[in-house]
Image (cartoon, rainbow, N blue to C red; front, side, top):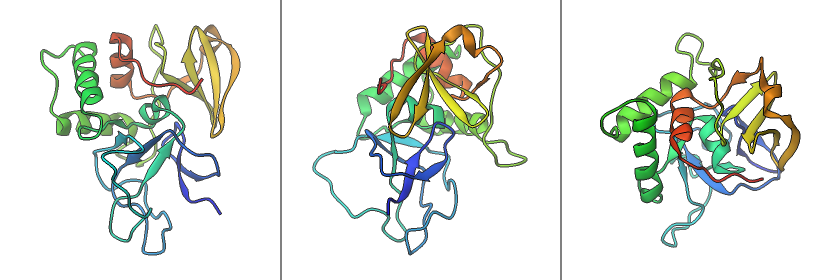
Amino acid sequence: MPRRNRVTPFGEAVAVPARGAWMGNRGCLHDEHGAIRRNWTTRAWICCLLSFKGRRRPLMQPGLYTELFFLDEATALAAGHRPCAECRRADFTRFRAHWARGNGLDAPPRAPELDARLHTERIDPATRARRLHPLPANLPDGAFVARGVDAFLAAGGRLHRWSPDGYADAGPLADAAGFALLTPPSIVAALADGYRPQMGL
């Protein structure tokens, strides 16, 4: 049976056999039996390399962070994760620079400041449910929109329906009118400024 550690663009952990191209972390979410019991325990939601400096460890060790996996980096960003400052230092530096310019800041924020802002954009404080946002005037490549339970990646002027196994073309980007924005708005601003995430198209 697959573990419940694959993450959708909505930030939900699901059990599917599909493997991911990136790993993520948002704290220890599992119990001593490896069952997911919570959605997050920290505001630092990060997206990591699958392999770094030869480090290896069993998945879901008791008391340690829960290893999460994403189809691609665009999915991780939609879920509200940002590049890891350790294993992806260059990407993190580049992301912070685009994030600062896109959001009108004079200097890139420190990681805790970035994480605090992202947390307000992905989680409704009253319900602790996932937040959706109005669409911006222009949707950059790499951003996700949602309609009902379906998520769509914007890329190349078209929408691409997400699934754990990959994408299916879903029509022109103009058809997104009336959809909700799924990727946190401040990350969308970073994408609009030129940050280019890996997309599994």
